Image 1: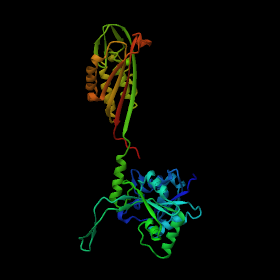
Image 2 (image 1 turned 90 degrees about the vertical axis):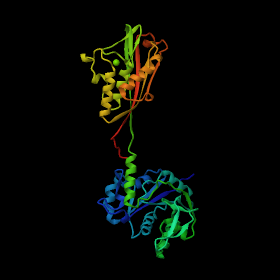
Image 3 (image 1 turned 135 degrees about the vertical axis):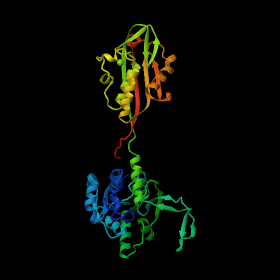
Image 4 (image 1 turned 120 degrees about the vertical axis):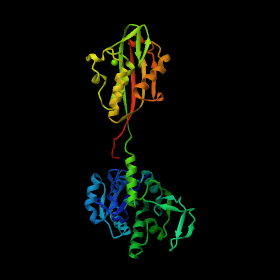
Length: 399
Ligand code: MG
């Protein structure tokens, strides 16, 4: 199927008095989540793979602000000066497309930054050579009509009532003609482009809008949008892994995950050679780029001789916390031919809970043999791997 040529006109020439005036200028230039409202709006269209020309209609006084806030988007957008009303600005935007003659044009409010690709697609999908399409949401509040005295004159049946959103999509030629006719006849009372299209008897269908596709009208709307985007700042979950192995020699016990287990061999090492806790220490340190166990507890340092390895885990947790981290869960796999780990698992989990402050359900200790092959299978050593997940706070990433 041949792809239709689709263009967009984003109107952003308003002065936005209802949102109040700030140093940032009209509301479309206010920043939400660190970026101008208008830049977010235009990006929704610029990143849509089906879109051709994008016309931004702006107020002549705002050209510097447009340059300032659009950055790289400027290369993707054609900027034209608006007229004295929204309707006049849309006409200017449509006329800017006359030479390229798209088949479908989407007309969108510059202050609807949360428009989704799905809504754009749904609108485009319903536009034909004669029919327009707009996204809309069913009205859920009960609607009242007020009289001059501020009393309810009527409760309006809300069944079948919808709130119109943008982008509103139309076949290009007929909507341009409709706008020209309206301007020629000084018919200027239309509040959206669909009503102007309907005025000439053209059909317009409704497609499902999106509750998030709000128009930022008041100062409070902009603040709410800003808060919403900041709330969406990246949840900073990090994962670290650790691996350790120690040699088995003749002896009478091993220490695994903080539990001393009688055995006919012992693990050789500077400290208590607890491979499980060493792997866990490395996994925790890895979540904040804090090196590894050797960085903090060099084997050359005599103070760690025979040390109980819980010290290393506690220190790693301290480092993680100092960097704003909260440990979510840890998972350790011991790889050993013997001794059996199962009978000691609950005690191991309890020891790790004491060291990390985690609930038992956030701690996993499991074991596997090496099927009698390799150095582990020959009972020459025991290995452990560990994974830790840590959530870090105070990390704001601009969305
Ligand atoms: Mg070790």
